[in-house]
Length: 138
Length: 139
Image (cartoon, rainbow over all chains, first blue to last red; front, side, top):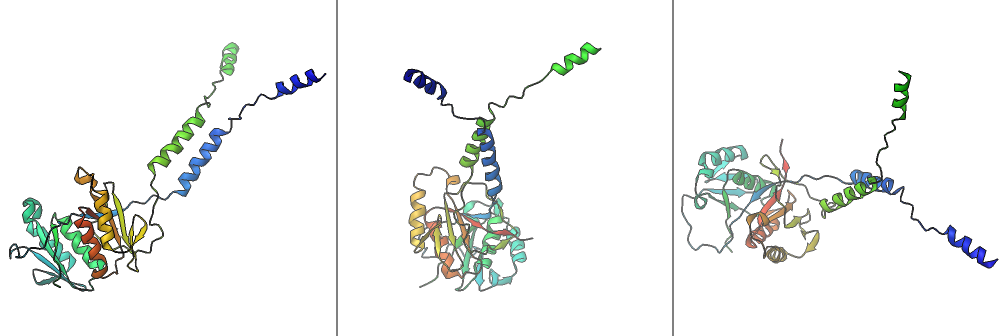
């Protein structure tokens, strides 16, 4: 009697994992990921700033210099707008010059907002210029 | 004619669905491996505008951000000053072999003054990173 019961119980325990709904679960997960993710396309400008020690003597007087005084932009001591700066940089034809002659010095006064700094940096980089930040005298 | 119709009825083409689960899981794994979790999603930063911005083509080694309060973040973690950024970037760039591996993303609030952001820019440059300054396209 007891033997019969034991054998019957054992037969019922087949222990199969139901995998039929696995694909449904997986597809639901995919849908969740697709709905929940936000695709961010970051836009930027690339600027390779040369690093090094401060020169004791300025390289050359002919090196173009951009001055940022607050919200005003000066190119070789002449006040310019961003559009005009782009025009001046285009005329320099920096892309055709060797890397050492592509240097544009960038000087800024205290309080210059990043917005202006960024626009100048973007303009110089777009015209293949190499930005050299002028250090403040302490 | 009748016979022909009967043969048409018999043709039941079973769609193989046994591997659907595997395909779906492979797709999930693909999405999880390829996606990148944004670390500075909730950062209060108003990006500057420029007509020269382009979509980033390179994989950046580090993400530096300066929020509207002037607090500096290195890969989502707050750091004390620009010197920490320099050391961090320098450490990440020690084993680089090409210029493509030197790109560092820099995000900064457009209203911040020079005293706040310039030391960070200089720190990235001093560590040997190529700055990928994030901005928005000016229409």
